[in-house]
Image (cartoon, rainbow over all chains, first blue to last red):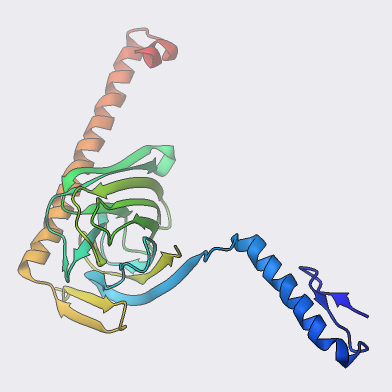
Length: 211
Length: 70
């Protein structure tokens, strides 16, 4: 006597069912699985595809190459800092064109948020050579993390990026939401991160959005 | 002084290469830090001036609602 699975209710045979009905039972189960997956994905390839995760220790800068390509249009970068040696500093972000971080002053961006005591804080730039994606307050136990969506970095168009960031040093918090663009049609293949001073330790991951 | 190194990772091959920063790369980082410190100093000075101005307006007899309406 057929029964169903506990979560999605797929039809499955029981141990007392006839073996001669096995082919039909497999077909029924296959149809159920097919219908469930289609209802979840709408028939599309969906979700984030992990491309790389790199842990690094006491680096002045980190560069991820060959990560943006024509395989995906959009990407998610997740950066988690676990330690740093800087105080009153920043984390800089740049794109990589070929094998070299960009040096032209073509970034336009703005980020706003709240700091200690709910005071308003902002990071912004017009025609800058890098983007300040987070702050570093003190070196002791500083956690400065962010996630960023990068839109069409490998296409010949102006690349847009949207990010949110959080910083906590054990006493003071800062949180930001920001967006910006590279004001040229450069096709990028990677990106670069560096604290304004000192070194940092952490992990950076990149995911591709399935088309 | 710490070694100023950059770790470059190739996402396709997984190859990781560490090298020392060039003088230009170090100068770029120092410039970004200096620029940010200057921006922060200016922002804090502006905030301090605003607080001072608000206090003076209050001393003149303006209510909080009137100050907010300016």
